[in-house]
Length: 512
View 1 (cartoon, rainbow, N blue to C red):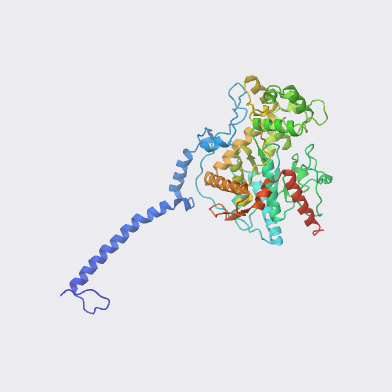
View 2: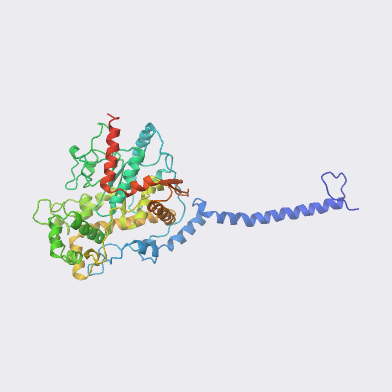
């Protein structure tokens, strides 16, 4: 008689025992086989979340690198529609022998592999904790600079090497505001960061000015805003001519130093239009009156006609004559001859390599912001923005005409802007190498761009909700954007500088 097996059965036959033993053996074999199949599958599925370790993963990364557009330093143009739409289509001139005047910025950024997470510091940290963090950070950055100077230039070293932590957010930054290189937008980001944390910003003393000193590198105490003795400033992002020793009087040497560059032809033409319209000093005014119908190509053929040769401050008040290099502290002694002095130019670039932690490229602005965020251990809410100080003109405007880059124009611009061209040609590849070395960089940039689209749509919708909530992801915590944030992001340079000045002076009353 067959009996049903039950935990309550007290009598079981020997045949049933054998049957159950056989069933148990088959079931165990099935479990082992399933594990052998499922475990590798789950590991492979979860691979992007696993730290890069072991020979097999290294081989995968190597295969990915081989497929990257900039592998082994070879520059290839990408067919990425996204970058093509973002960048202006200005051809790249050559010097007649095939050498480009500057590197083509339409080349796509290499796809990155790996993973990257960043924790950020809670903004409600107490002042005593912040002071402790600053001292700790200063020691770390000093160590960093020692490592950088003793390392090969091909090695990427950044503050992030010290690892993410709740107290790793960088709060002391020197940003050199280069003219007509998206620097007003970058300044707005830094000033909002400073206000959110009650940081001290090095500002011009005069409430009518937005620049501290655009004529000489001297930062006299009479030019800067009041500050309690014994206290340093945290942020510099107003126009100055860079001088390491002058800035060190106000901001610790351990502050992270950042600058931004732009494709030289675009920067020069943007400056030409802006200063002709709004600040027509003698040289630009005379050149425009001479080439009213086509000032762009008049400048490219004869840039010397747009320069006031016989005035005392002709060079420092000129923003179309290698101005990026001047802003970054190039010695203007015998300036015209210096354009052919390769030794002097290389020495200048070498000093910038030593002084600056990061040289951004405005032609890749979102990429620059993500790279900056990672270096400073900031969050996305710290780098969201709307574009500021962007030139607008009608299609029939003389400023809408395309540059004619024939041989004579190329040679003229190469001679005129030689220092800026050398500067950009050096730091643009350095920038590309930095972002190539970052894990999951293109993924973060794409996600950040999508977030920016939502922010801009929200800010432009006047009748919409008061808050926009952006979700947490692998690169940043969740955060909200308010209409007040939109107003701050849209403030003109003079207005946001005035806002920061008012708050800072009000806070100063309680510090003295």
